[in-house]
Length: 248
Image (cartoon, rainbow, N blue to C red; front, top):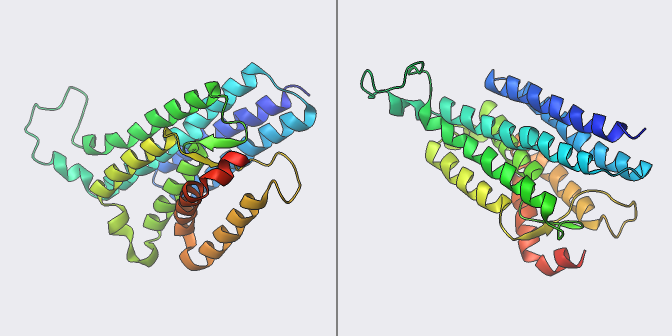
């Protein structure tokens, strides 16, 4: 029984690896289903551990290691693919022969590699989370799953050209700006609502229920972009209701 939570955590990691593969193979819809699997297993491992009364230092470390892939490397890869598809690699067209290192080619998009800066700062955020005693009931900074949801919404909206926004979403300078903003938000000191369900009473889950209602409403109007929009709502709500966050 004591190994069940760790098995669920490792299942999160497995889904993250699969999501990464499909992302790099330019199949974001299939990748999105595996990201959903990451979220399900990420929630299930904690809930199962609490239900069974099982906690361990190993489980805590495994959880963060899995999240680095699922909610750090995967969204970084999604941004990388957006940069490649948006023409960031055109910056390489005028590179003279012999400039690139041995083994590299013009198909290697150097201008898209900054996307993985997001993974660096996701890892830093997860490391800080493990040693931060404040983050028991609320988060300090944007959580890596929330960051992944935001990026996933952009990737799916660009893939389906939702509202004709594909070229805007793929704009390399917009993506560079989002990388910087998301990296900062994850490691900021902004208190944000905790979203994990620790009890089943209405009062302690009030914000989660409001969040769900807003998300469903946004899905009706914005389709895939609702994933990104609801994270904007989440961040702004946390900033405006800072005292409420701190009192939870």
